[in-house]
Image (tube, one colour):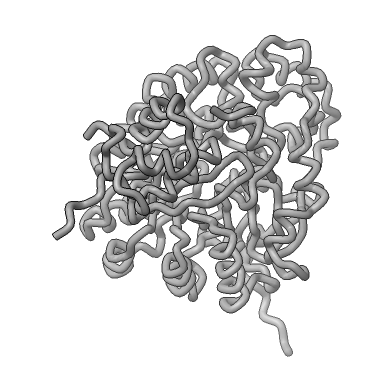
Length: 375
Length: 92
């Protein structure tokens, strides 16, 4: 009945985001090597409780149905439960991503008692060695303990969230079995070269051969496995995967970072993709509706070097962030182009020329004991 | 349940409808489903179900011409299976 296909209309932007990610803090007890936000230390400019609640008021008025909370580790914030309860109390459902460190038996019971709350526990390997190589020593046990606690508390179907790397592609079936054993839902997403991931992507991203394996596996599991629509670059391999098959950045998706900066998506924390700040006059709504960046992203995009490729309609040229942080032009192939064009293009990138993430909250490495300074 | 012209429907109480340029977004807070209502007429029908006795009465009141009614029965059936609309509970 519609005049234009839905996806074309969505590309022109929505009155408010469908999928809004809000990183609550840059503080984190872990230092995952692929962290999109280079988290570790809290930023002194982070939004206060009152400021965060004001943003939630705005999102309620915009009728944002739910938010995806992340970090850093969001449960590090002392006002974490206050903000979640305020959000849900205002009709904004919450899905939050956590490494599980703070989900003890008490917290698990508290979380289980709340409505409209979804939890994603991050796990990047079905065994300790594979997971901890990426997420750090002890992180596997931490995540499994949190899962056990949620299951005992009767939380219901939480989500297990996996970033697919070349080391865990062979474990996809085992991840599904693990999720099933908890009555949990499996979510697998694409590794992005953002944040610290910009430095580790070349060693971690799935190989060209594995891309086909991931596609076949996702096709076989259909809507039983969540993907955040993150694998649409694989659609060039055949029938489309479930989901919207488009880049939602600035159109249906955006990110609010811990200091209130608004970016086009969670994978582009860089000045070039910063649309404004929730503290600016007019707040988040004005940024979403009027920023020059978001307006330009809602214009028709050029297929550029991909225009002559028969698969462009299927893959849409892939992920903007993946291209940006690997130094590729935005109107060319995705670095993981299943036609192999990305690999070619990467060979032409001058080493060291790819843009660096604008902020780094990685904790300083302490090789020796802190010197005692006289004050 | 199959939706028919004489069905007595209502918007599911756990569903919020947000207007958009193409029609509206409907979100079910219980099953977390997000549904695109791709035509303004579907939006007005969905929002007005409760004001009229039957689906046919709603379609009539919303000015939907009878030749389009079959497509609306199909659309409402799909929305019913996603629990965006439901059969009105019998009055007690």
